[in-house]
Amino acid sequence: VTRRSRYAFDPTPLELATLSTLLHWALGVQRTASGYGSAEHPLGMAPSAGGLPSLRVHLVVGRAGELEPGIYEYLASGHTLSVVALGIPPLQQALVQPQFADLAPTSIILSGQLTVVLAKYPPRHYRTIHVDAGVAIQNLYLVSTALNLASCAVAGYYDTALAELLELTPDIIPLMVFPVGHHPR
Ligand SMILES: Cc1cc2nc3c(=O)[nH]c(=O)nc-3n(C[C@H](O)[C@H](O)[C@H](O)COP(=O)(O)O)c2cc1C
Image (tube, rainbow, N blue to C red):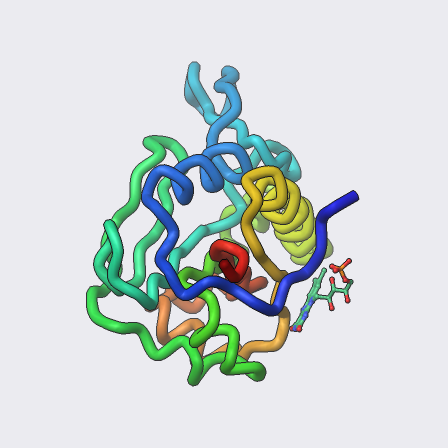
């Protein structure tokens, strides 16, 4: 009932523990099952078609806190962050509403791995990846609300600029930006 899209954020960076909790409960591994040639294939808190790892998750950290400003990738299988690039990221250049990059200390960005889905399913399932992203965004909205964080789904971005910022390969397409931070204090 209290879930809303928020457009005001406190400038303080998110604590690493808060970010970890958000990522785990929204996008982390829920369980493992036998499949895809593995006895322990990871399945997510957010369901995906065929239980495939169709989404990539990046963090754009704009303000120094426990994490240095930069771009990180969230690797759900180990619940770890991997550094993509350090330094203040120019996220505003990739957004139709650049103010989100200045207001929110962190943005989570979901991208779709088309090759993972199309290796198993016929071409019409290019659409399924967008549904997977929608499910994941709702998890992010609900878990961030439960953690008393401010957040907003943002579809207004420039494809090429965002893909370049995240250093995505051509088979990976950005699908959604999710600025998140504390409510204004
Ligand atoms: C898929 C999706 C994309 C959205 N993209 C944007 C956006 O680019 N810019 C923006 O200001 N709000 C965006 N929103 C927020 C919506 O405007 C908002 O969810 C809607 O007005 C309903 O408000 P509520 O989320 O507070 O219930 C998006 C929401 C969704 C679900």
